[in-house]
Length: 160
Image 1 (spheres, rainbow, N blue to C red):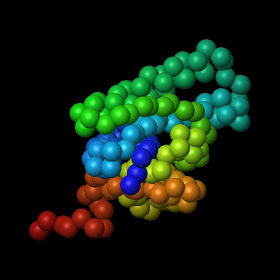
Image 2 (cartoon, rainbow, N blue to C red):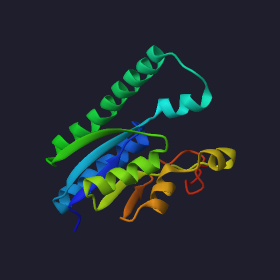
Image 3 (cartoon, rainbow, N blue to C red):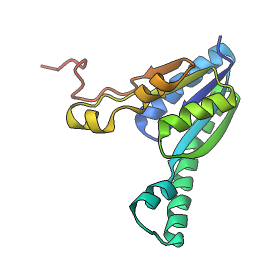
Image 4 (spheres, one colour):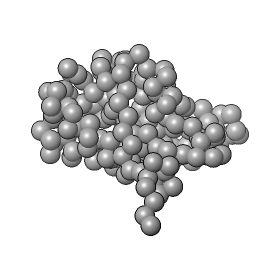
């Protein structure tokens, strides 16, 4: 059914659970996987804020790249354990959802597997959901997992 699955990660436990489930699907379909982490483009952010020394910019980039590699190490390990072919990408982008959709198109992916988190109140309005934005922009299917249900999630049954 699916031949090439893109799996974004932000290194969170939510994301790791979705990746584990995504590899189960990839194995069933015989699909290959591309894991991706989107680094924030500090040059774009800082250009709009103020002048920043080049050394500070380089340090931030180096730290972000190191963090991305540690997130993608989980993807590689999960792929190896599942026996699924996997490549990884680190890309820069001002908006993660744009970078995810662009990467899916450039890599020839036919499915995006990612997590979706429940947020409520003001944080839902301000932060929104990257998964929702990917879903609305993508021309290929997007499978979202609610990997971990928070204690205040409305679907979680309260223990008495």
